[in-house]
Each structure stands twice: as structure tokens, then as C-alpha cells.
Image (cartoon, rainbow, N blue to C red):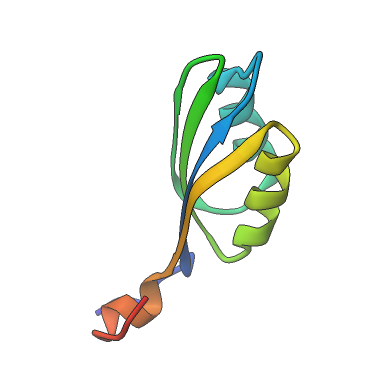
Length: 85
């Protein structure tokens, strides 16, 4: 088993107005270290999926855009060891 570079699988939904998935994707790519980024939705609801070592940064950024819900942060290293993530 190879080491996991980015520990936390971070997933969330943002509800707001005037959301722009391309701008959000670009900002995350340019600002935060991580991989497996998915940003999808429309101008009122965006889903984010991102692997990072610092999920609180993604959550703080997303909270600046709108209301967060369905937030999930899973420790993939623990999951790889068969433990609760």
C-alpha cells in the first residue's frame, strides 16, 4: 500500500446566489494544495469534492460563498487501515 499524499477526503454542498463553478474551481486549484478536485453545480448550489491535508481551509473558503451543508471530512489513512474514517 502506498502512502496517501492528501489525508482528508473533503465533500460539501454550498447553497448561495451567483455561484460560479469555474471561478470556484480555479480559486481552489490556485490557492489550496490537494488533488481529486470536483466542482459541479449551478449558480445556486455547488458540490465540492477535494482531497487535502487541511480541510478547514476549504470549509472556510466555501463558507465565505454561501451556506454549507452535507459536510463530510473523512480520514483516508484511517480508512486504508480498516478503521473508521
